[in-house]
Length: 210
Image (cartoon, rainbow, N blue to C red; front, side, top):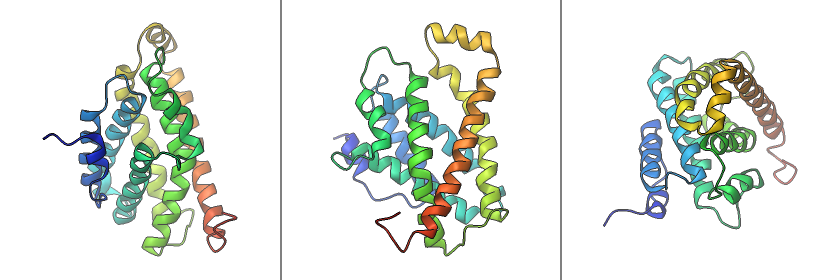
């Protein structure tokens, strides 16, 4: 019998970027095309595949790989969460089956929640696991910033498949301007995520306050 989405999500936690890619592909095969999570997963899968291809050339590839895995696990947790669903994810979850929402809107909503809420958590978890002190200018931070370029390239490649209806005409009219603005926001959000992670790192001995 073909495994269901619940079966896929209940499998062993991924240990490598290859495991993450495999799980995202399995998720893509089991989500309906109109499901809001399908649009986000499609974009996230493309970004993860780009990181997988580039990972050997990063300055701290082991750290990057663990961050990628821990980051993705938080998304997988969200897919199977119920009462414990993080607040940041609720707009996407509540609208995932709503008609009239284009795939790009769902994808951006997922990026917003995943970067702003999950990325700081994943960074702290990876710093603790790898026994690495957060340091701006260090190899881990340099790799973190290099991912921005991969995001920009992947977004440009995948976006045509996520833009439908009248918005396609507006996108054509704006040309690269909207892409530049969108990626500026993503880079700003990722910068803020690193800053928030530094705060959580400082507060790690006070979990309730963190």
